[in-house]
Image (tube, rainbow, N blue to C red; front, side):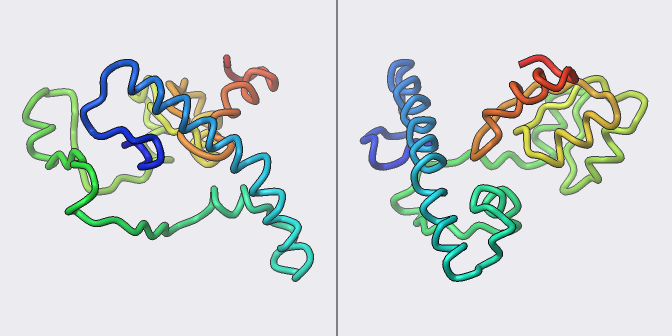
Length: 154
């Protein structure tokens, strides 16, 4: 969904989607290269877990609160599990499943991932190839890192 600053809505043309994608990664670059270092200085100054960078802290967040109203927000797809699994016989939708166990299963052939650290480590451990969709923070750099370390291709 596009940030309001771009002036786009949920009915985007290809050009709008490209603008949204470029704008999102531009904003994330500004955050990563200007805001996070400034936040790290404040953390250092006030001794607020200086051993953990702001980027690391954001990446490890277990809960993110977003101020949004269903009246003004965009519609989001909420696919019920039974609807998804009734469309094809090779998809099983469940509320929760242990990712590490799934990646370790002999029939797991590929892993679709946002490229978070834990996902990358678990897939590498089990030797499961990843099709990545980086979304935030350090995730866009992960394909290059895996290529540099010779356990993936960027």
